[in-house]
Length: 196
Image 1 (cartoon, rainbow, N blue to C red):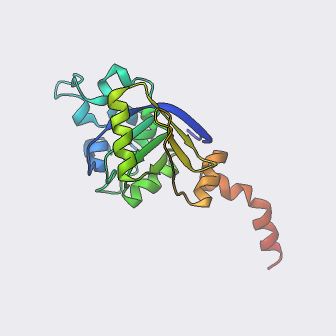
Image 2: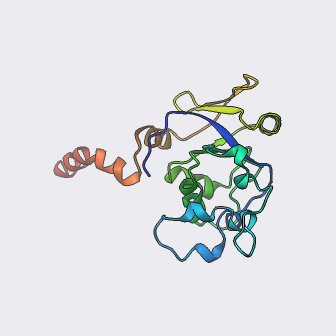
Image 3: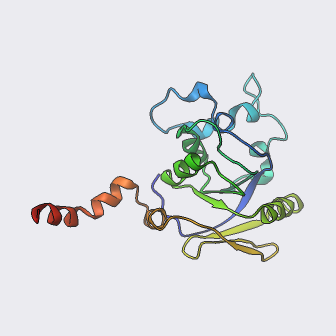
């Protein structure tokens, strides 16, 4: 799960829907589980499958053109609603390494970062361009460069910078969760305690 993130070049799954909330990302009936296994199978469950469990044709995750994509491109205000971390578990469990949108709900954005998924905020204009590019060519790629904090549409060459906290950037680049990070500071903490 703790994969380092540096530069990601990948095709994308487009989800041009605004205000996607965490209940749509992972329905409440799946929240009983306490470990992260299997959540990717139920990502967007009610949009992805009918009541009999058959894949719904036309939903992007069921479209073979987008198979293997590591980037989800979503409409504005992604991850609103309840603060359930399970939504980020489902996104990571499916295999996405990054989500691109013009706006994320704050708690969901942090949950993604805590699960080694990079939320990338772009301008609404750039987001519209990315959706158009994918519509024209489902195999079009984005390059997300975490060290440089840039996202580039390789089809057009257009690039934008994105923000990330220096701490979360360090953790993603080094594959560290909060506990791992604390453990790297163990000697400093012990030295501080001895000096008190």
